Length: 63
Image (cartoon, rainbow, N blue to C red; front, side, top):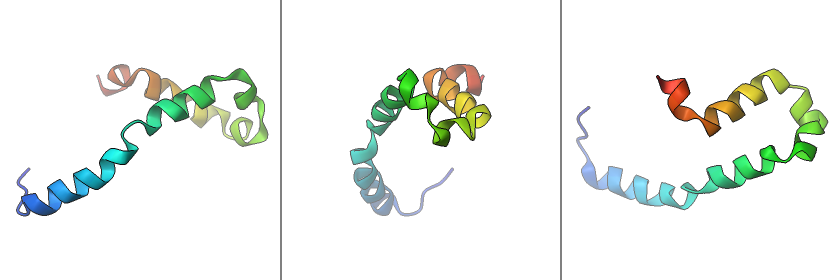
């Protein structure tokens, strides 16, 4: 992959760094059993369970 505008890329990456740790918040929220017993989780439990597992063990998904 060739980036033709390194300055723009650096600026964009700098803006995204504030979201770097949001995954920890999301994981800890959904790991609470009570949070997985609400309709917003249960209505799409098949997808949500797969996405949570992928989030917790990304290497297993990518391999």
